[in-house]
Amino acid sequence: MASWHVRSWLTQTVRNVARSCFHSAPDSTTAALNIIRSQPSQYIIASVVGRKYILTPRDVLTVPHLKDVCVGDILHLRDIHEIGSREYTLRGEPLLPRNHVKVEATVIEHTKGKMEVVFKKKRRKGYQKTIKNKHPYTRLRIGPIQFTNLPLSS
Image (cartoon, rainbow, N blue to C red; front, side):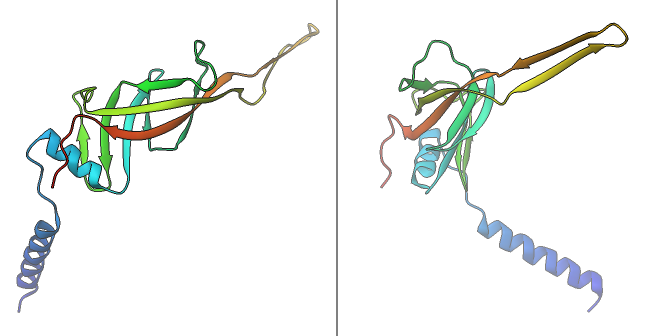
């Protein structure tokens, strides 16, 4: 057989195998959330303090200092952009509706970062100045991802 014939047969076979391996898309948002809920591990992409983070349950997240929270307070993550598992992903435009997914974060501690030293000097003037600073941070523990108002698929 000619090499082009073998190559075309091989690509056609690979396409057929790949087509049979991929899953079909769910019909509705509820069906997609049920499929994601049945997967062993899920993740979310959420905005916390203006930045997007990829989060899974039991993650520890360090964010810039949150002033009005105390250790042990529970925060509800409202801005969820995407939820997914290993095989499926559901994206919002730009956010998922708040009634589908509920994620909580618990404040673990308020801490400071490493010491940052800035040394300023002007030549031949005798001016030397050292500025030291530690930025404050808040650490959060991400709770479980809860799917709300969804009927269980059977």
